[in-house]
Length: 477
View 1 (spheres, rainbow, N blue to C red):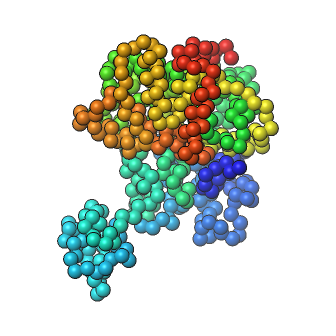
View 2 (cartoon, rainbow, N blue to C red):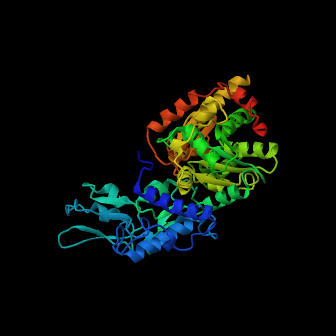
View 3 (cartoon, rainbow, N blue to C red):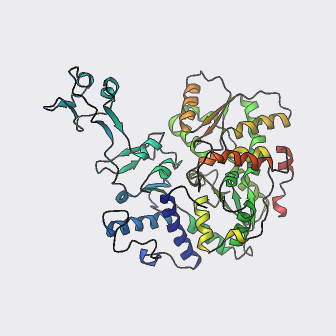
């Protein structure tokens, strides 16, 4: 069974696996010559124009896998040398141009960027074009198209532009680190920084729990990942790797649902705080709505705080589908509670760096969350949980959620609120389509993932949010 959606993901994984393998052996990967032959380009190029370019790109992949550019605060980075295969972006005239007499495209162009050759075919002068799109709108043959690169199409906050060298450039003032561009780039020219070295260092220095205990907080979307093995085997693999305890982030979601529902009653209107990409989008694009962001920590941070408050010298690693979590852990409000973050992609690389076949392991169990905590992983789950929390706490308040599936729907809801025309009183914002199950750090992305999350939720022993929180007992584990 395939572990990844694309060959780009597989290439990225192989680099992460080798970086991790060297880290376990106390030897930093200093040169691509230390990488197995199946990864390093041979004498004949297989993906690029020459093996020298392939090796140069591989070296950049290794750097990002080892933490990336320390001077760049963003966790999303562009490998410039790998970003040169896409066609030039912008408006262009296709073969559908019939050389008509109307010349509407010429008439509406505000900069005189359109001219015609001896066949009356239109041409666009890129030095004059401001990409307003008016020519495309009036063309009767739809012969003028706006050609965007995959990364630009993927980025719904318009944080990606193309430089004069035809290389993608990320505007950190707009970027919400959702990783959509990472997943969609067909050349793997955009990657998220990995902190896999930090995770391995934390595990190794714990000396098997003698110096301190290392806790793995796993996102509920894990139920739709690692489809080649059972979830209990994944948990067993984590403990064999060196984690003292593996806990569901869904328990943190239960905690957040109870407190966020109370906050909603007190304030009358609220935007969710669970998705770091959504929160970053509000702060960067709708700063006037910042007061409405829930003051609650995300499930990751809330559970991390609980662990740190109840366990001496604990270390907390979050494992999930989200690249934006790598930015969230750097916030002053979160940094004390979460020591590092890695994605499901990186976890797979960690297993394989130890030559660990989790299929052969006996199943272990997760600390049990409620159904409602577990369905935070998909769009609509948070709103359902808040409604349930209101009911369980006998709070007389009707939640009217605006469930936003992806950042484009978030933008619509936030725009309405900024204009005071939003009818709903709670915005559930998910930057990724589908929710966390659509995160860039997932091994696979599919429609079946939602059903798997719901089924996983129904397997919860604790049927209410209050019951799940009441039996946490993390400090006794």
